[in-house]
Length: 263
Ligand SMILES: Cc1cc2nc3c(=O)[nH]c(=O)nc-3n(C[C@H](O)[C@H](O)[C@H](O)COP(=O)(O)OP(=O)(O)OC[C@H]3O[C@@H](n4cnc5c(N)ncnc54)[C@H](O)[C@@H]3O)c2cc1C
Ligand code: FES
Image (cartoon, rainbow, N blue to C red; front, side, top):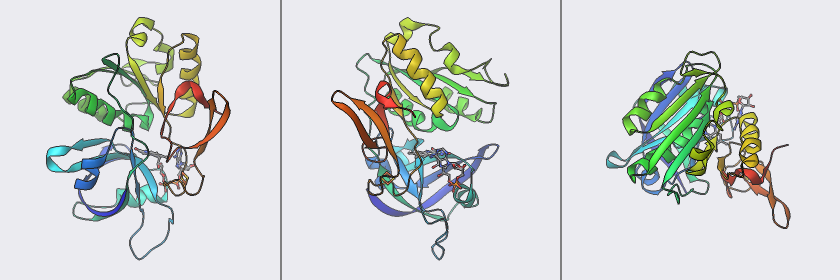
């Protein structure tokens, strides 16, 4: 992990209140693995508010050009500040952080199940796996079509996808969780990664457990330090010998879905 001052190459609107920021950062591009994130300082160098850095999954990398991107939704002070940054500005960040996951599929096929902004880390997994010639399929659910541009990214990567939206404005109307067991055989043939709202992960956990299917969940717990010091991001995890408390920023963000205890 390094603290870097890196140049923003673009910071463009991707959807309503959603931006994609491209950053020139050879260190991140060279060292990042699937599921990892960067922790961004969200105020100008002369200010201290907000004090805590904000975590963002690495969304994509372009190795040839030493560029990586993050996809973010404007939620509060930090992300509002980020959305106002322009091409040529500098962003101060720490990264890459978290433990990388290995998307090399034992079964040869990957299935990514995403909800809302949870698609951000799945996009990098998809990129790495597709570059390695693995077959990638995506099932994703959204409230509406605000993230429609993602379909363009997936088409460019050449992965198979099926989209669901609650208001029916994108793909099939409904919730992604209502359709994951449409084809149980497909689920068994794939290594599964998922990321999304806790409510979605809870349903997935229940449904997949019923079919005895394993999956890796990428969690996005609220964070303090992002480097394993403050214990602000601890989650409860079932282990053979009892319950363990693990830090999403250090031991995660990827965990075996069936082991996570959602309170
Ligand atoms: C490992 C990790 C990766 C992430 N990757 C992305 C990403 O790729 N794209 C993206 O848009 N966001 C991502 N997030 C969430 C992002 O960090 C928060 O949205 C951001 O910190 C909000 O900062 P803010 O100052 O704008 O808002 P704040 O003022 O801090 O919060 C605004 C609102 O957002 C809620 N919020 C803050 N952090 C989180 C969180 N972690 N999960 C759920 N709700 C939260 C707060 O409770 C509050 O209601 C990630 C979080 C983690 C932990
Ligand atoms: S955010 Fe501080 S230990 Fe994880």
